[in-house]
Length: 162
Image 1 (spheres, rainbow, N blue to C red):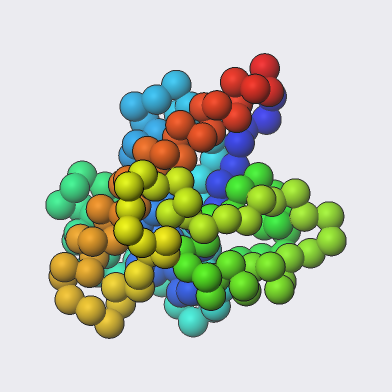
Image 2: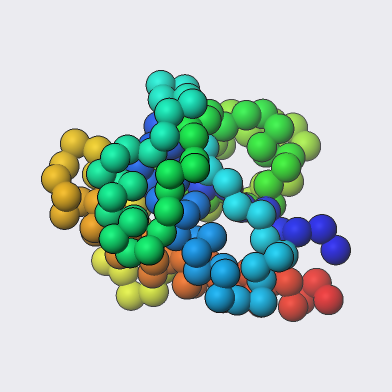
């Protein structure tokens, strides 16, 4: 069976989506899914293509044991819609962009990432770029919560395929 693939998407791919990629990969390490899931991130814009994640996002993640330093920003590509099983947007603006740019033959299921969260008051991961340190910490809290729910979802989905 081919690996299950997930793409996390935000606008610039320097704050939220690389944080989600890093946190989710870290959480996968402690599960039987570690070799069954491919994870990546991208942005809806190319403003920051080739750049590393925001220094504040990197520092906040590092304080929680998550390394974002090897990641580089990239824009969502047409082939991503065929390559990934699940594309998770950080907010409604990203969902709208993804649905508008989805190509014929897409296999990707497009959802808001926080739909996998438990007991959250928010439905979107807020953009911390123009805020202070607390914004990055809050984003990490939301992403950690939704990542746990996403792992449960994938486990159930893969069990049903067996």
